[in-house]
Image 1 (tube, rainbow, N blue to C red):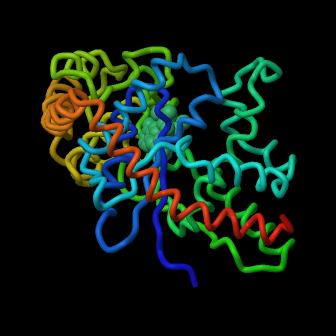
Image 2: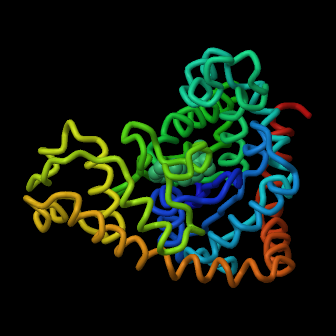
Amino acid sequence: VHPMRIFSGIQPSGGLTLGNYLGALRRFAEKQGEIETVYCLVDLHAITVWQEPERLRQQTREAAAAFMAAGIDPAQSVLFVQSHVPAHAELAWLLSCVARLGWMNRMTQFKDKAGKNAEAASLGLYAYPALMAADILAYHATHVPVGDDQKQHIELTRDIAAKFNHDYGVDFFPMPEPVIEGAATRVMSLRDGTKKMSKSDPSDASRINLTDDADTIAQKIRKARTDADPLPGTMEGLKDRPEARNLVNIFAALSDESADSVLARFEGQGFGAFKPALADLAVSVLAPITRRMNELMADPAEIDRILRAGAHRADAIAAPIVAEAREIMGM
Ligand code: ADP
Ligand code: NA
């Protein structure tokens, strides 16, 4: 049996959002303690679409600051940058030779991200799920906390691990489990309740950034798309109101309660009352994080030092696992 080890990552492809915080960072921080936690800033994933080099470098530091500000302690967790640890790219190639084209063709994220002109997308964007499998399997991770948008990728990782074990007649890679739990595992855009809130959405008004100040947060929530109907007493009543459902879910996630208990308090009220309450709540949760991020960003050399130390620890875990995979494959 494989000892329990948690792995997860976030792309430093833009400023992190409230979605990243509620769906990922906050959960990552909660998991620290008894279990080994490995958290990675996945810059090799970020470059599957164009990244301006100096911006990428800056955003990687900013993402590291966001992790630490959200409570990820680099002494407890292994916190590092993917490209600093060669095991990721190497194992990705080995696993690309295990994964089948047909499996990759079924990945919905490529279709979403490549858009209409898939021929112009990078090969890396297409191969992205094999790199993600390598990220997880290079650490023999057993549990992967993710938002539910990433569930399909974890399933693919399991398929790749199982095929490797089967083809080479070994019990080498553990089957990682996705850990998807709680409210707001998918925070939606403030402009369109059917799209997820994302740092890569071209509209800044669609998301709350962890670097937004109180006024910006209040303004974005005030302008969030909604309808004119009053709130019902339970979530059942929001079935056909995705924008309203999203705001209630965000409230519930921020206040750590169920959406139904939020609605029990706001039943019969309109968004004129709900939105200011949501804005106050969001500011009270995010302001301390933003403040801490700014403090950390004031000393980039210290962030770099922490990330180098994290890469060293990550390499010590992953390099021997990838060496063994190579050995199993006859190299
Ligand atoms: P993004 O879409 O913002 O680029 P990533 O793909 O880097 O985010 O995802 C990093 C982590 O954050 C993943 O665990 C993902 O599930 C989570 N996440 C991203 N967006 C959201 C969201 N809108 N709601 C909940 N979790 C999210
Ligand atoms: Na993403």
